[in-house]
Structures are given as C-alpha cells and as structure tokens.
Figure 1 (cartoon, rainbow, N blue to C red):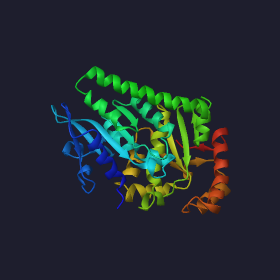
Figure 2: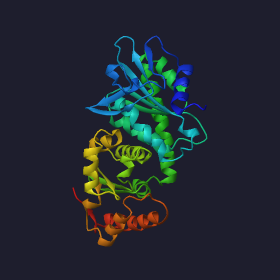
Figure 3: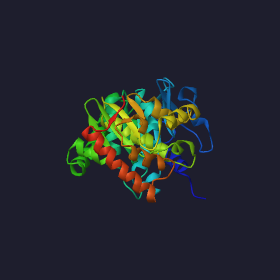
Length: 327
C-alpha cells in the first residue's frame, strides 16, 4: 500500500532531523493519532492566535529548557501528486498560527515532479515581515536541520533565518519582474483583484457547497488564496467577493459551519470581509439572474461560460465605478 503524504513527511522528518538536538526535542505523532488536533499548550500540534486555531501541524520542536514550542512545521508531498497550481497554498495556514505567535513556521514541500509556485515564497516573505514570527518555505529538510542545530547560538540562528528569507524574496521578485512586469496592477488583474485606495476586492467563484460537501477542496484553496491576497496587500481592507453566493448563503454557513476550520478562518481573519452578489450596487439584473442560475453548479461547461461572461461585466464595472461594493 502506498504511503500517505503525511506518513512520507513524518518519516522523512525523523530520518533527516531526528528526535532531538542539545537544545530542542521533536514532537510528532503517528499518522493514525489524533493527538495533533490538541492545542500545542495541551501537548498537541495545533497552533492558535487570538483565540483562532490555524490548523494542526505535522511536527514541532520544543525547547528542553522551557518546554515551549519554538518551531512548527507543516509538510506535504503535493509536488509529487499533481499539485502545480494554487492547491499548493491550501496548507499555508497550518503553520501560520505559530508565526503569528512569534515562532518560526515552516511549510515543507518535498521535492517532486512539480515546482513550488513563486507566489508562495512571496506569501511567506511578506508574512515574515508583517507578523511577529518568521515563515519559511523549503523543499529540503537539511535547510531546517541546520537552523534547528543552530538554535543554541542566537546570532547564527537569526542569520540562517534571515538568509532564507532573502532567498525567498529573490525567487519571488524575479518571477514578479518577468510575469507581472514589476507591476502590482498587472499582478492584481491576473489574479482577479481590484486595487482601490484603502481597500482591495478579490472575486472568486466559490459556492456554498464548497464548504458543506466534504468531497470539495475549494474551501481549502479559498483560504490559501485569501492569505496570499492579504499578505501581498498588507494594510488594506480586503473584500473577498464570492460571486456565486448570496448573503443568505453566508448566514447559513455562519450558523451551520461555524466550527468548520476553513470557514472559520475566512470569517475571523483581521481585515478580511466576505462579500456576495447581494453586496454589489449597480449589478445589472440580467447578470445577477445569470449568476443565480449557476449558483450550485460546478464551473465547467455551460456554467463556466456563463460565469466568464458575468465576471467580465463585474470586473469592468468594479474598475470603472459603475458597480460598487457595500462597505
């Protein structure tokens, strides 16, 4: 039987880094265990900040002196499992609770067939600049091993983290210059985002079923896209516009999915506000009717064609001011 992504990552952590160094000890659980769901303060691997749980991690390194965590790692074998696009972002938030709490968070994507999206390096770099802790994206556990072994030397430890942050920025900015012509406006247009003074709008085709059907992964991706947009436009209020949802859908999810971790993060992240077609002023009636006609339909075939036509109208209207969003 083929090993799961979690089991592959956990075995590699133990093989490459080991259970302890002179300063730190590893906290890790077998794949079959549910102990990682407990909060880190209770011996688990779930990191929280300001009362919000950001997801469980695969491993953490605990100070032998204080018995408190200093490093959290979330890992995936996604690069060997046909994850070449924005699906790579969906586990970004798992280590983010540690970063927000002032610790070192690491997202490890094991080397594989696909490459790490350059935007992911940018997400982590800007999170490191904005949050209390640092966030590193790696594809080689030996990088983390060196950092862990340097923990007893604060100067060297800090230097290694700063050097990796600089490498991440270089990867991001190189791609930014070539793909987006070093223009945030170009970046925004290509990522369904509209930049305004003091706020941004990002629109997406999320629907209620993405958060109620266990077979759907779009909720995870929606959270990843949310954090990408937030960290790239720090300081601006972020209106996340779901064009295939109504205010009633949001209310339904608030009641019935209040404990769903993806929906909870979307509803509780600072400066992020969910909006729907009911929050659009000036939306043509025929466009609203078309969007409602596909509100429960996956975006493929005829539904995708209808959505594309509607998006063109909405995007143009939001950019020229004929359509506005309720604040």
